[in-house]
Amino acid sequence: MSSFQGLFSLVASVVGQPAAQWLESHVEVPESLHAFSWSETALHRAWLAEALNLCLLHKLVEAVPVGRMYVEEQAGQGRKVLFDHGAIRTVDWVANGELPRGRLAFARLLEPLGFTDVRTYPLTKLNMTGWGYRQQDLPEDIAQFFVSELHPGRFSPAFQAAVGRIVGSSRDPLNAEHLSILNRLQLTRHCTLAEAYRLLPGLYEAFGRQHGVVQHADYQQVLSESAEMAWIATEGNSFNHLTDRVTDLETLVAEQNRRERPMKASIEVSASGRVMQTAYKACTVNRALADANGQLHEHQVPGSFVEFIQRKLDPIDDKLDLNFDSSNAQAIFKMTESRPT
Image (cartoon, rainbow, N blue to C red; front, side, top):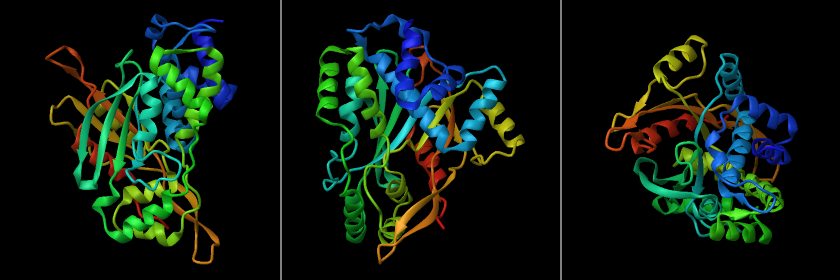
């Protein structure tokens, strides 16, 4: 079995064989991975990072039907999507159940996979902070993670109390064995193939909602002050969005508008002028919230979305500009601001 076949077998162990085959035919996988070891006894962290990213991309397109439609249309035009980055939201709050607070819940798994927080992005309008986690072995080829933290301490006492009730029941999807394997990866950059098969499901599960039932009153309380915290209340640490890296964003936007897709009205341009982004509006999902009597009722709330990005070369080093932009990010975050019903 070739290393690429092995990669998709590993992916299939989490998302199933049909999904793995779909990913293989629709998503670009870097040939540069072949520079790193793949064996029963020494699997390099870069392979595991790519496997996780593929699984998470599939999870998002399953949750965002228009995203899957887009990916399949690209394949119909002879192009595989190039996964640039995924984004997650966390809560910087000490009463976070079993989870470490904020981004620490993800630093403990991203860093052993070779990701480093290369830059901090103040999201002051949202009372949040973002971090760009970039994979150090293949920084241009393996999708980055944009990890943001919401800071409840900057909101009202009523908001903080609601946040505590929402996230206080969080469970930890990583068990002792997962953490032991991650520790070995951190130290040696390798694990065995058998360990990878045991670790990947836990990593995949981490990108989801870990807390229990949310009270409708608590949801309304946080929504009144932060659309981002309201989104976390229903979606947890799921991918907020994933991003396709394209070569001509304006042409893509024109085509998506022609198809009458739910597009953001404008393209965001970074201060450097080298990073341009836009997105679909978030899809709508049904989530159950509890009333004062504990009865669950379905509500329509914002889900996740697909973003598009064009990156240009940095003239200083003639390399692709892999940075993010605080202004761009805050504008993109507005895709999940739609009001629930």
